[in-house]
Amino acid sequence: MAELSGQGLPVVKALAAYWPGVIDSVVQQLAWVQNPVVVARQLLAGVSNGMLLFLISVGLTLIFGVLRVLNFAHGTLFMLGAFVAASIIGLAPQHGGAFAAALLGASAALALLGVAIETGVLRRIYRAPHEFQLLATFALVFILGDAVKLIWGREDLSVATPEALSGASRALGLTFPTYRLFLIAVGVLVAIALWLVLHRTRWGIFVRAATMDRGMLSALGVNTRVLFTSVFALGAALAGLGGALAAPVVAVGPGLHAQVIIDAFVVVVIGGMGSVMGALVASLLVGIVNAFGILAMPGAAVVLTFAVMAIVLIVRPRGLFGAPE
Image (tube, rainbow, N blue to C red):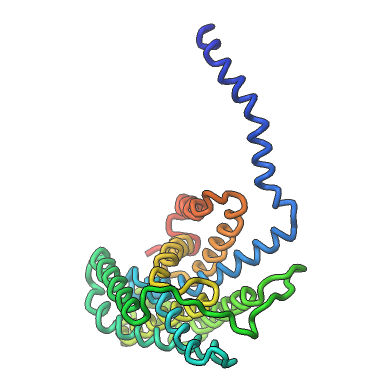
């Protein structure tokens, strides 16, 4: 026993010597917590990133909730929206309405593409196993990705922030980029519009019913084919809108889809498959965790997002707002 104690003593002394340095390092790393300006700025940055992520993930969760298809190509639709917006803005870069036209054009173009994908591909594989559906949508990633390279090339495109939204504004007592505040406003408006459509329209009632029992909805005489097509078109349009909004703040390039699809799936899993409210809450949660994680743990900020997902799944395996099948 004495020998064991003698062997452990140097280790204890070493820990005692290094412990104050570890504490000082942690205190320095978290010094920003005492600065309210930094906290407020990161909070707004997290919310703006979360709202942009919401526009991507809400379409993904709607598509899965109704069609029961894991659309791995959703990130590619987001990328296409950014490229379409860049092309529209490039036609009249100095025109004041070019950015608004880009938002509408990207949403409309992706809605049409969504109709083509649903009717030409997905409609044929609804009854197939999820693995087959994943492979089919994964194939779309390569097809659409190569189409982007053929049309727009392999170089990144840059999109200037609209003049009306450039500069900075005051929010929460600090100066913050106006365009980031615009992203927050658009996210809130889209969330409200979706809630109204899903809870105050006949189409929305059918969509919510389809998430619960598609077979019964079809037995009641509802044309589920048209419903499925319209839901996929809406999801694709939201992805296109998200891509168009992201164009001024990201490098619009052929690899853009890979940067967002993982975060989008994380949001859907955390929020609950098929839940719009879950997508909103999870998007804000992921955005804020990423924003503060960069300050607290710069080298492991990405890990924090997956840690949050793991904790949520341990506590609620169906996600925060997921409903039982």
